[in-house]
Amino acid sequence: MTSRRRLTLLALTIAAAPLVLGGCTVDRDRAAQGGKGHAAPPELTVTPGDKTREVPVSAEVGTAVKGGRITGVRLTDDKGAQVKAEPREDGSAWVPSAPLQPRRTYTAEVTATGDSGATTTRSTTFTTMAKSTKPQITSTLYFVGNRTYGTAMPVTVAFDPGIPKEARADVQRRLFVKTNPVQPGAWSWLEDGSQAYYRAPDFWRPGTTISVRAGLEGLPIGKKMVGDAERTATSKIGRQLALEIDNATKQMTVLRDGKQVRRIPVSLGKPSTPSSSGKMVIMEKHERTTFDTRGEPDGGYVVDVDDAQRLTWGGEFIHSAPWSEGDQGSTNVSHGCANVSATAADWLMGQTQVGDLVTVKGTEVPLNAGNGWTAWNVSWDEFVRGSALPVSPGLRPAPVAPAHPGAVAGGSPAPAPSVSGR
Image 1 (cartoon, one colour):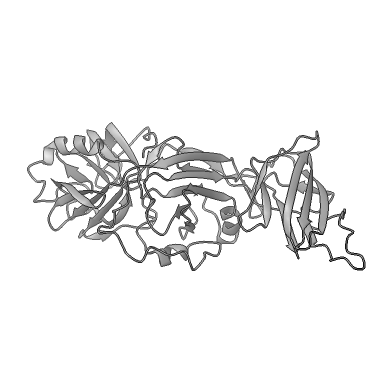
Image 2 (image 1 turned 135 degrees about the horizontal axis):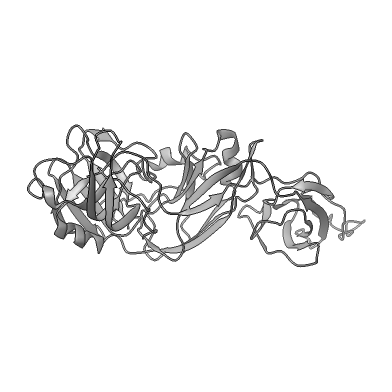
């Protein structure tokens, strides 16, 4: 059985740090090749501006070129050590691979080359600010390194308090996702700014490696807060598995690569505590846990449960329920969970991964946005409307859908220390 109180998954805590780059450009021009009879060198602007102070540690080296392209960037600290950085895809900036250090001076030397071969070099020296004393926005990255996730696994970042709309673009620009092989995706925010999800138009392809960086440390968020930390993680996507639960038949269909491998009788939430209908993702798995609902509405019980798999923040799980095996397949008696037999629950634990898609249909209530990792519970068009930055209109789902919604779905962060169910 389960309860609707919000629970916190065990995950990585990260910070939210803003991208703030200084003013003007610079000083040095090696391409004095623009004299009579020579092609003009490219125009190059670099930020932060020279001698800028109080630069956030989340700063990037901004580059703007007219009549050429960037062909060299070297960033060094005040001891002469080179700082690793890589370019943004749009070429607008070079991003240090780790936050800069507070109260340190850095020098960036940038070279641009025009089509004619003429070059322009600019350099800028700037100083970072002291460690901020502003309140921090706590961020949590629900993507753990060295795991295998299901193909519906969204990259999820949660924020407390939520990010205001006017700050979301700056925060989103510091959330990086790389996939190998390449499978582009987009970020989308919940309306209250409490969570941001990243996914591709279609489910991840099995075997894909996903690397995530939440480069938020020291990022100014609005005028009064900053981010708290930086986190990175790299994991892989495993084989495809999806679960489809139909309230009309009280059956769960288990699909592997779109093909049915098993049907399992279920008992869902009774009318007073109905299960949610929608597309969910397995969030965590517990071989054994305790549902403690004392003090919760419709609760008041404490029960040990085996083989529990979380679907929502509100406390909906798939779990072993030997006490309701006589009702499974015919009658809904739970407090919102999907009850299955002890044998079926044990089998499912050996098949599923965190990130597998679970679709429930035909119940009395819809799944609420943000009640779990709900990135797949909306269409792609609706999903990209939640982005704080433009999304390419060419990024679209494949024209031919799989035979089943989870035909490419399917990893496992450590379980939370305390759990309640319904």
